[in-house]
Length: 175
Image (cartoon, rainbow, N blue to C red; front, side, top):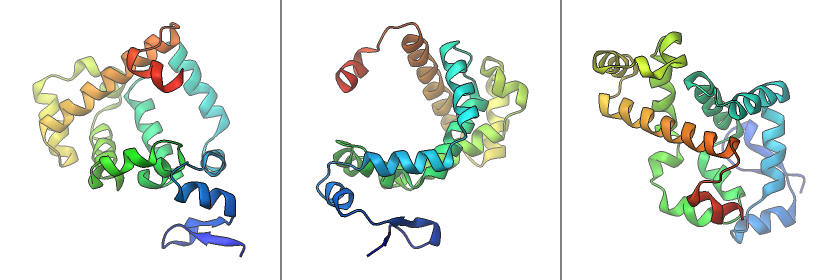
């Protein structure tokens, strides 16, 4: 056997590695396949630019949109989580609409409904702009607020990481 199908489309054919498949089935993840997929889809120059922005704390909604699009290129979120050791149990606890990318799709629509000026400076988003963005993206103002809150939390976490301070909730994961 040379290939294994992980989905219904042609781009979801992968080289068959029995040891990797066995570890995936046992819930131990498959980091090597995940890394290979990421390397095929990521542009190294963009990755270095993103690293520089994170270290300088200049990460904005345009960068957030680019990251969402890169994650989508790697594959469905459910499959990606299965490849990370310890996360296969988490994928069973996450709602199906999150795993099929529905939330990521709505986040992408929200950010694309913003002007470039709003993406670069989310502080400009008052109530009327949020309503306009919600109408343009087919979402609600509450979903726009949810995205902005998650973005602010991500920015805060990146500032802590770049300053050398590890957030409490991440210490156990990495240490």
